[in-house]
Image 1 (cartoon, one colour):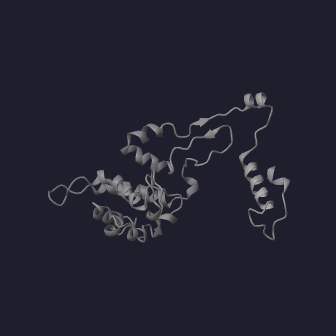
Image 2 (cartoon, rainbow, N blue to C red):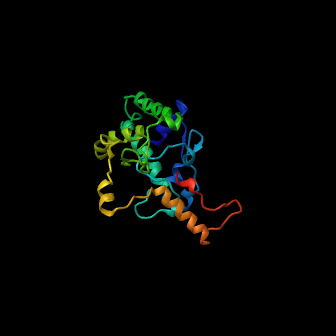
Image 3 (cartoon, rainbow, N blue to C red):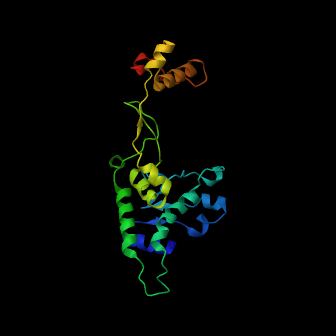
Length: 214
């Protein structure tokens, strides 16, 4: 199955190079040193490309439920597995290269597009009319692809972009206080740590600036 994917990917110019023997082995130390490339770029350097529901980290740092680079690589090929379910070497049925090529061409176009053109789900809540609820660590097209194979993803896909509006008016009236913007709190904390000697004071440091909070 992996050979079929590699052969088809090479035909259309999408190169997914994985050392199958070591990356898919149980030897974590060796697998940590094997690079995974997509279009001649290490997978960690591909702009805004994240494996669906995966975190690409060194295997040596893996804990109980954290997905390693090995599992992340497997997920990519598992998504392609339904397209290669027929054994075309033992019968006269041709391999469905047209279906595979369509999927790989689609993925190739996504990886080559500028990140600003992709629809992203924000990982951090940004104050506006409401707060965006983060659902996935992936560009929208990859979430859509994953929803084809996963029922839970299909249900969540319909709620992407859902906003929760927060109204602090009642809390302000009850407590008689204004809420501080998280950005202001972080800046104040850093200034306090510098002035108390917790963080080193560099030569360029000029003291607390009020315009930082405007």
